Amino acid sequence: MPLVYRTLVAVPEHDGDLVAVTSTVLSRWLSKRGNSGARVDFSVSGRHELSNRSRALVVRHDNPDEGLSFLRLTTESDKTDGVWRTVATAVVDPALSPWRYVWIDMTVAPSSPLGEGSEQPRLDVMPPEAARMLLESVHGHDGGHPLPPVPRIVRGRDDDLVDTLVATIRDPLRRMAVVATGSPRDVTVADWRGAMAGALSRCTGMCSGYVLDAAALERVGALLPPGLDVPPGGVRTFLPGVDLRDEADAARHPRMSPATLDTARDGERIRNWVGAALSRRVRDNALEVDLPEPLQAVDALLDEETHDLRRSGPSAAGPRVSVPAARGAAIVHQAAQGGADPAGTASALEREALEQQAQRLREEVTRLGARVSELSEERHELLAETADLSEELDTAREQARAARYEARWLREQAREAGLFRLAAAPAPSDPQRRAPMSVRELLERITDDSVLPHLYFTIEDATVYELSDSRKESLWVTRAWEALLALNDYARYQFDNPGTGLDFHSYLRETPDGYQVIPVKRLASQESDHVRNRGKLNDKRLFRVPEEVEPSGRLPMYAHIKLDIEYGICPRLYFYPHLGPGTTNRVYIGYLGRHLPVQQSN
Image (cartoon, rainbow, N blue to C red):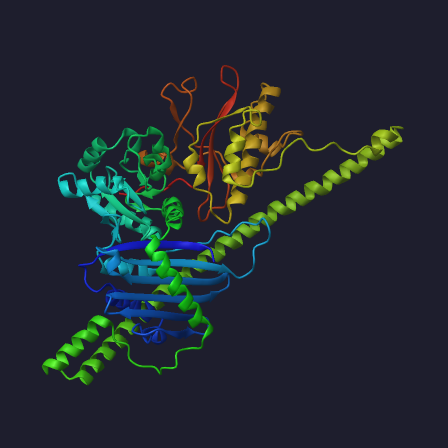
């Protein structure tokens, strides 16, 4: 089964009973699935049916004489796209001193087998909530340094935290990524930490996050090579094995520039795609992490026993109240001291559990209500998109029908003129290559100067790559390619027909024969007054051009092509035509990426 998530956490041996804590956390996690989850017993091995389509398998090993204790919980859920399996394991073994270990894996078995040569479909994977709950309950470490559940604030006046961050980056034993960011000048460190906590929620357990203030940025920058800077308002991802002596190693550690991140935020609010973009390399790294050799033997043993449980029926033990280990010990102690009635205490615990479950159900109702609203909005978006695509399809069909008729008519005219060989000759192959299907292929085409000779690109690859890993990637790439061909042919048309004075909008309406066009409705020739008259919003439309076009090296580009309808991500392509006498006779492409912000925060 393909692995889609992994976290490996080392816990100091002085940090309490790891197996008991893990049992308590997993019990709370399963309780969110209802009464069946709350009844899972972690003290013995067994199989428990959570619903008609999900089950839990517990493997427990205890050897007090040798100080060994193993716990594994496997949950399996049958979904439309396959079987999702989450495996949480806690291992206490004196041979691993001074550490104890807990790790969580998530795998997916596709519902239909992949064909030969086909790729594994991209899955929208969120870390299991159990990972966050576990990291909040133990002092988790990666290598010799902390692995916090949420980003930590590092202030320049705190010597210990600055040293901890730099030591974590350098740690040769580190397995997971370190994600570090500096707060923008217009956002407080606390607010930026909250924003990054949301963005890094896709990375829980797979990285440690740090948010630096200006003083910390300066101090950390002095301790790291220039190529490994942490940008203010940007993000640096430090993968394991940082080599400070090798300048070429810096390229291995992804950097999201402040300019890129600035297009995705409104004040401290960050768009969802940032988290998806950051999690890609973090997750790829985590999936490559191998268990330490001693844990591999334990993993194999627990796998065998889990497989045996999977083949057996549900546990024969009847339902009973499940008391987390820590609370169970407290009840026994109180009963021994005569300070409380065990039955009464158990009854109180049952009432508390029911109250907690009622609260969870209320929260779930609220969440589902919000989800219904989101789906309703998405439905309207899809209906509008379908209408838009249907209109384009009808136009394309009509053009194809007219082209076929014209070809038949021309062949008939050739035959009537006695040109029988010409009338029967097949048409030559279309010299124009098919449209690219992925962002990577699109960028490769752009770098080929012979394909689009009349265009000049100043776009950032990072903003284009943000369009990848989406179900609509091929649609956006195709439309971007069609737009680039149309802009290239527009420049060629102006060169071939000097003095026409046609702007791009008129060019698309006239559809000159022999030149590429796109539907005119995709073009927006100008931005609104609201955008152009707001400093921050206008600044986001300032893009690089050669100094021969604008001495300052940057100018505003308002004309853009819409690669999707006015909903959702809405990619845009911004351009500036510099055509005519005394110009460079080129069209400059300044931006290709997600929709730029149109509202300004206070």
